[in-house]
Amino acid sequence: MSLIVQKYGGSSVADAESIKRVAKRIVETRKAGNDVVVAVSAMGDTTDELLDLANEVTPLPAPRELDMLLSAGERISMALLAMAIKSMGHEARSFTGSQAGMITDATHGAARIVDVTPVRLREALDEGAVVIVAGFQGFNRDTRDITTLGRGGSDTTAVALAAALDADVCEIYTDVDGVFTSDPRVVKKARKLDRITSEEMLELASSGAKVLHIRAVEYARRHGVTLHVRSSFNNSEGTVVYDPERLPEGEAVEESVIAGVAVDLGQVKITVVGVPDVPGAAAKIFKIVANTNANVDMIVQNVSAAATGRTDISFTVPKSDGERSLKALSEAQESLGFESLQYDDQIGKLSLVGAAMRSAAGISAKLFEALYDAGINIEMISTSEIRISVVTRADSVNAAARAVHTAFELDGDADAVVYAGTGR
Ligand code: ADP
Ligand code: ASP
Ligand code: MG
Image 1 (cartoon, rainbow, N blue to C red):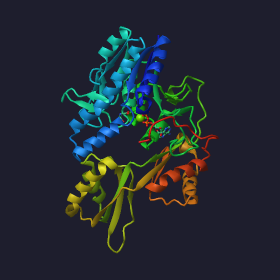
Image 2 (image 1 turned 135 degrees about the horizontal axis):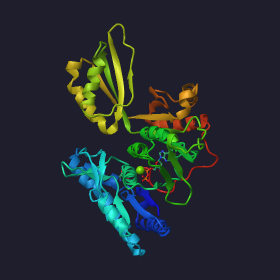
Image 3 (image 1 turned 120 degrees about the vertical axis):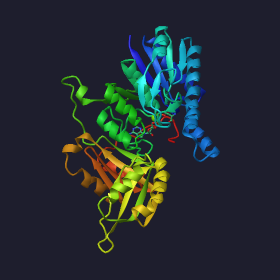
């Protein structure tokens, strides 16, 4: 008997009909003789709607209360899903994150799983029940409060359950056929990948490809969980996220140079204008930003204007960290001695990812040429071993992705299908 962990995303359980459809899939897996544990997301855009509601009440909701609010979304879907399965004649039981033993640190809104103690889940499985767990939520032992794992965190719930229960498979069911060479909502000709290395998936996820939560990919890598991304709307094969080092002997596959192109519209650019060009200036600026817990991504420093001995430093942070960083820098203007601050929330980031980039020449030249041909201006550039990222204007980043996708010959023959969801 196998133990299968399945995760269903919000667009797969958007309404009562969808919940019944998913329940049927789960029952089929159960009837095939497997133990089944399901992690489920909130219905449709529930999490966004709850966030909107909170922001209508106050622009800065208290983090503890926000987690209380947002975790309610998954409570609704888990209970409805369990009811649907029971109505089909199969035993099913739903559990909140804390009932399921999802122990996290105390960071509201971005909690990390530190332990999983699935005692109650094991009992339920032993009694023959299908187990349904609310995704995205956990519990901190010190504060005794409910936490959430960050947007998209239900994927991580599923992986943590798979690792703790030593599951045979962890299947992530979503609204597209698997992991594509780019977001099918942006690049119509995106091609589904049959497999992708966890290293590339990690880089794509951290570059804005929200098909998998970055922490889910990290956690899976660390615990040796093989992820299988599939559509909940058909039975096609999906994408396997694998670790080349764990492949059985003789199963090595030839990797393509480029795995995919990701787009991220979730960052802002802050420019510190007229910074005295002396040793330690950057250290002071980024210490202040770091103290706000902002996650700095790209950094560019201009050459200093000889006449003034001053320079400009620009960096990007997630939108949610932007205002905080700006305020902290502004308060330190006198001690830092800069002239002014600029805040730009109209930027887009495009990233090209591929493990074989390490040994391939001319990738950046080809990327820049594709952008030049499409008439798109590059504002910032950064690279890692297996990624090149550029910042452009927000309104041209999607066109940039399509141009780069074509230039690197990633286009498929037919248009990719998106089965549901609003892309929100
Ligand atoms: P779920 O609600 O199932 O968790 P998400 O909306 O979080 O679904 O993730 C699925 C979406 O991720 C797709 O609908 C697609 O628009 C987007 N996406 C972004 N990049 C990619 C990619 N490279 N491959 C597939 N989907 C992608
Ligand atoms: N419901 C949460 C969100 O929308 C978690 C998830 O769907 O993975 O971010
Ligand atoms: Mg998701």
